[in-house]
Image 1 (tube, rainbow, N blue to C red):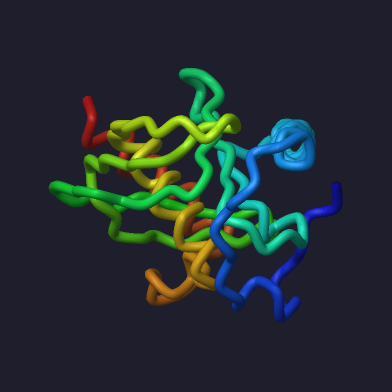
Image 2: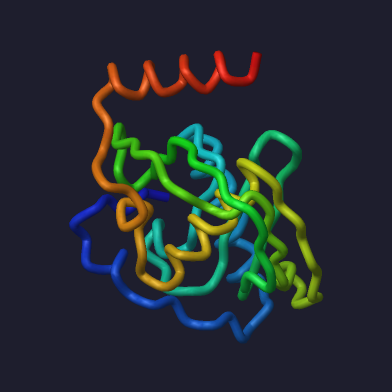
Length: 162
């Protein structure tokens, strides 16, 4: 599917709760997974493919997850990291997000599960769930970074880890 880009008014709308756990939902989730991987993303919300339903897919490198009707039930700590979005290609900014997040969500069959995310996965949960409420990561950053600023930020982060 095509990814909706910033400027499209659908990105500012609130997504509706998923009520039917059927073949249409399964197809949407399958399409979202394929679209996310094709775009080299780590997360994608249904609204980003033009569907106003509360569904997201995530893969931060430790396995694929589908979350239907997700809600954050707790968060702890904070992290300042670079963040981008498939709907804002090439745009990156530093955001403050929780370091750890717990999320309650349903799977494609309607079964409730609880997921814990730390670091990148916590940031991804927050980012994608915010899409469902019509918000973008740029609301959490003072400004977008140039490529040079991004490279310097990454270099400094790597040095602080040593």
